[in-house]
Length: 82
Image (cartoon, rainbow, N blue to C red):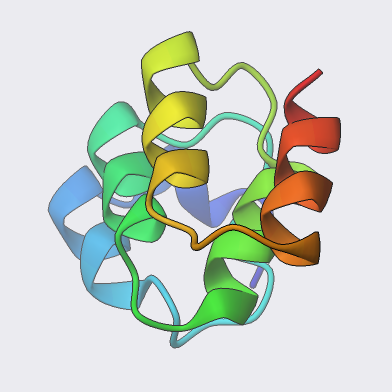
């Protein structure tokens, strides 16, 4: 995905692209796009969000982590949140 796409596309279009376009988790996605990625069924999408999205709120991090079962993956998300 071209990084500038997040600046020109309406949020509702970006929500539809979550999980379809590699690299969607760029630095400053609208909150509704981040929320869609947090609840995306593909763990790779959620992980990419955690690695690349900066400026997520505490609530968004908490929801992302809370939805994961206990284990190594959840601990890795917790480490990224810190």
